[in-house]
Length: 346
Length: 255
Image (cartoon, rainbow over all chains, first blue to last red; front, side, top):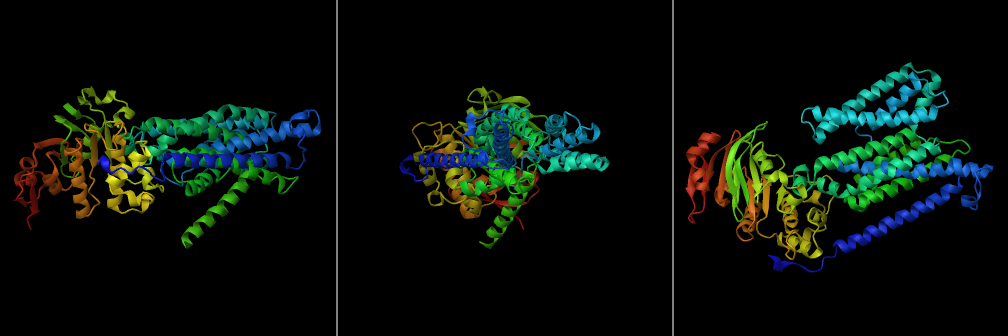
């Protein structure tokens, strides 16, 4: 049978590698351009000479070093991890509608933030934002640990379905508990809570951004390294095992990375809706389902989208500011609807 | 060679101990009524479920001691009709798990009559085409360890769970002939869970008959699939007809 081989194949790996290279380079260029525009847009206009020269002691220097630079970094990191986690979750559950908050990360964080604001009176205190950040992160991690621990003991323990159902149940419980806290909250606390729920990068101060710089890049690397495993998993768990995949290890890696990365993003910026669903979904239509291209492209695409929408959020109603989560949901929802209708017509 | 030494499972679904060997070049069919434990047995042969008593050895080494990636170079799995939910192209799917060179990929596609479908999306294929794609992928994976050949070297093992369940008789015949050729010409060991007793009777070199987690009969098809046994195990009444070439027999249901 070996005689029947055809020597040239137009779609072979060398072409694929070139294609991958081209796509990723284009994304990097677009992201750099967006960052360039974003750096100089906002309620305070900055001049290019400022980027490196100006000292933080001047007004412009302060805006750049203390507000805008950390915010841009946060947008890049959070956009990248949300989109990458969305890609990983969709791949892991083999479902294009999975998103990074599928296993309850957002509601776990939300419950903890509600507890901090309502029960501990955190909003008014000097530690307000930091406490909120720490509470959100711990809440996200806590619920993930619970999902894992309970999912293992549930019927059919250890399978993806058991995990998904446990996540669903804990998600509901945490949302309900968070709702209960909102019910007993006073007006000021309620406003604080609803602002957090909308998602904003306005609170991206250095301590939070440094934490993000420490946590998110390793989780991105972990997710990049899961790409091949996620590809194999698309064959089904049994066949993927036959092809050499350690499914349990892949699942653990993806969920730990998502919990850490998304937990930190949610703690830092609240719930930025739709990004983790929209970016992988769109890029998959365009680039195909292979994760070795889709995963890095999602990271760059997510970063790009969040930098652009955050810049719009800062400038559209300047000097006031729109919550960026509202904007991503608005843009994302409209785009999804368009996609849906367009595909139906064709 | 896969060797079972009193290998069985104690936790549900349980499996009574089996001792036997599966050698390269043979086509083994696993048959039995619904819920007899066929897929469970296949999972144990694959190493997905570790034997809880006795042992399963591949080439003299206990299966649990092989890492998943080591095992992947020696045996591949085609699970029951499971297609990816995303729009993979045939070419990319076949390449999954084998990292084939363009030459080997093209060779596999050609051998499996998939060349014209290479750029098609798998979710839009017919059942027969999709099954060919999954088998091509498994063969490509096995061939990864044979350095200069497009085709798996002998000694590899292919495990299939009801590969014919969604196919019409034309596709069933082509598929079974292909598997036979892989076994007899290329020296692969083929283990196939089959629902259709006629396919097992006609194509398999050996048959294992399972009932309620126990292997109740094994041997050549005509020894195992007798009217008495089938009536006893499946509760079906039938007549058998012999083929003029002497290979296997046809099983016909009594009206």
